[in-house]
Amino acid sequence: MQQNLIDADGHVLEDETLLDFLEEPYRSCKTEGGIIGPVRNVLGNVFPTLDFLHLATFKRSGRAFGGGKRVGPDQWMEFLDVAKFEYAFLYPTVGLAMGNIVHPDWACVVARAYNNWLHERYMKRSPRLKGMALIPMQDVAEAVNELRRAVKDLGMPGAMLPSRGLAFDLGHRTYWPIYAEAEKLGCALAVHGGCHHGMGLDTFETFVPIHGLGHPLSLIIAFSGMVYHGVFDQFPKLRVGFLEGGAAWATFWMDRMDRSHHYFGELNLRSRYKGPSMQRKPSEYLNNPNIFIGCEGGEAGLDYQVKRAGNFHFLFASDFP
Image (cartoon, rainbow, N blue to C red; front, top):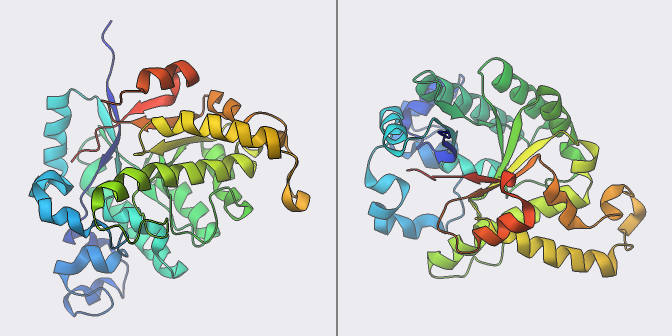
């Protein structure tokens, strides 16, 4: 029986056409060097920098960020055909820095513009291109509204959660209305690594360890916060993916957290949460069929991960382009 192949994590490369989807008065600034700046600097003016650490990758542009080529909807369709994917879920590139936006109002403007751009440029091109929304988590009420709009009006399957940059960890009650809305809508959320500053890696002079460690560490922190602050207990039908950190971190997390939970599980500071997550082993959360982990193939220990957690948790990702 033929099995359908799905790409769980690919990327769009944002370009100057995104400016046309900004609300006024910001759209008019694009040619005046105002708040948006020159068109040629669209990526660095609409979104903050990822972390000042990715600059090294541009020296080897043939091996990163599209291989130095302009990749758009047509190239994505060609890739799906060649790789024999039925469809792909699309995430941003510079938009991975969404959590680094400081001003809530600007976060709202950028999220709406990006989602409209993604829908117009990619999703209208083909139903095989399924864009994941950005939501302004700096303003939770607006994030709820934008998630609802993206799913109901734009037909998006869900939204990305930034792994770094927000004021609180992803398990914090501040963000619970977003999870409640996602559960109500039946849509997916996905934590995606990409911003590595403030993780103890800032003084590294080579990008390899920054990339190799930054992605899984940010997912470990995000997942730990959501488990130990009760998100998956409060919202049992919530579907969340943890992407671009490989699969190996999951078994490390299970072993390490089970041990810490055994010795220190009763030390619940301020006694704010006394739900099931303080009464069962952390590793049991990876038996939750609504939690997914991205893998990109070629991982030597993937067979062991599958034995530990079951194969239904793992999503294959091309990370194209």
